[in-house]
Image (cartoon, rainbow, N blue to C red):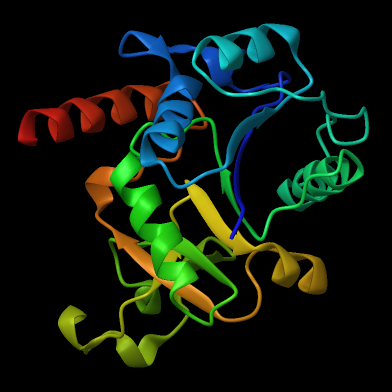
Length: 230
């Protein structure tokens, strides 16, 4: 099976300017995703999808390919990850290259390791599933979620208030790091979180959304803690 790693890194970050190449513990944060993909040894090609020359230059410096730039359509604030993936797959096809399986990797995911990527790709290959997604448990039971209505707190599921936390079914959410997907399934379903999905559960220490400067500092703290443990 031919495999592709695509790292999606456009230049127009708003909340954290130049987020995808901002220094994270000594190197551009995108470099961690590139290095993990290359070191995993499971990809025939590791590329970065971008609209930005500086990002492209850094991607190439760390060993990734940038065979083409994004179109204007997939570079604006309204383009989705699915839009970007479709463009990458279609452009490679026009260039005479097709891949049976791809991994879409976010550029701000420094917790990704080569071992994780390798295990994820091998697990999907050995299964009949359409894709594999890293997930993390909600730290607080969502069954006890509250809303504010007319200035007052209201429990959405009051029947769960008397239950012990350990008796409530665990819920999970997307870890926001990468997706391993069969290309044919993606084309058929026009999405990445559809069909039969395998979960890869991560700990909270390995997951951090990075949407603002506080998130960035938390991510660096978590990264350093993990490095000390290892």
